[in-house]
Image 1 (tube, rainbow, N blue to C red):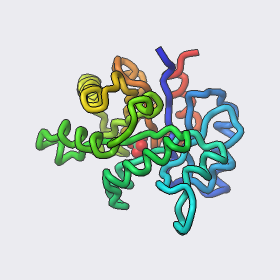
Image 2: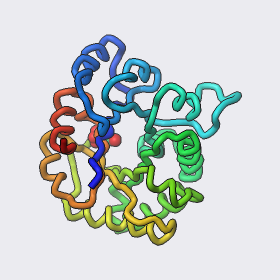
Image 3: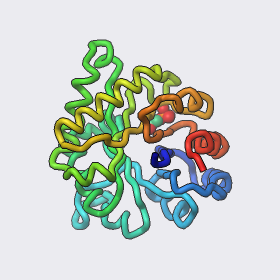
Amino acid sequence: MENKIVIANLKMNFTVGELANYLKGVGDIESPNLVICPTSIYVPYFLNKKFKVGLQNIFYKDEGAYTGEISPKQASSMGVQYVIIGHSERRTILEEKDSLINEKVKAALNNKIIPIFCIGETIEQKSMLRTNRVLAQQILTGLRDIKKEDFEKLYIAYEPVWAIGTGEVPTNLEIEKIVEYIKSVVSEHFGYENVKVLYGGSVNEKNIVELEKVPNLSGYLVGGASLYSDKLKMIINKVVKA
Ligand code: PGA
């Protein structure tokens, strides 16, 4: 089986001064299975190391009059290999819709950038037993018109909104069943078997031991804990087998 990946989502953290210390901490990590996604203006500090670099968002056009946006073509030309798309913070705070997210996924793939496509239910949706319906809707619109062969490249990150930054994590059985459901939706609607699914939401250097028992995950998306290089290293060591 392919090695799992760990995506470090640094979100909007670190001044340049603070970054120096963090870079020292992660500088000696040698792992093609680690992808660090810093604030986009910091990308050059993270390139040319022995891990990979991703963005936390991307625009859906390659170039032109789009003030303030970041083009997938430009990102690719710099050496960015991954991009997080449709994170719940962007869906909520910036009101990103499934159809916009779909454009971004396609633009990333067109530029050979691997999308980390995020989906997840809110606590209200979960308590109304609507989780599966919500996830299916996000997948069907967010991945509309994606070619079968592109499913080989992309990752779907299952991030329950109620688990992000809260310290709460679903049970292993809940994660396993939802991952199975996600794979079945993709298989039924896009004809691609066994799409790679990550788990994200309060993953840390302690609960990773238990999470590693979930049999059908391809890796993790880590926020808060990834801001500490020692914690990030502990997570990678538990997940990526030599
Ligand atoms: P968290 O964030 O690990 O801090 O819960 C995960 C994410 O938002 O991707």
